[in-house]
Length: 53
Image (cartoon, rainbow, N blue to C red):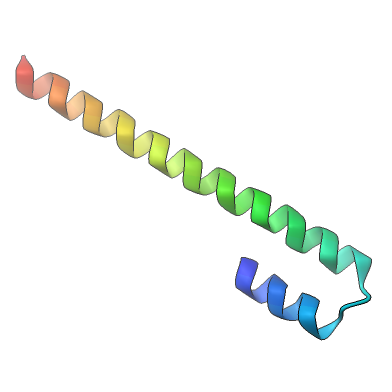
C-alpha cells in the first residue's frame, strides 16, 4: 500500500490529500506490523508454556 501511495505522491507532488493519505498509510502499515509481531510473540509464549506443562 505504501509503495503505491509513494509513487502517486511523486507523480502528483502538489496534491495535499494524497500526501495525507500516504502519511496515514505509513501509520496504518506500521500499526499492522506491530500487531502481527505482538500476536506472534503471544502465540510463541503460549506454545512454550504448553510445552512446559
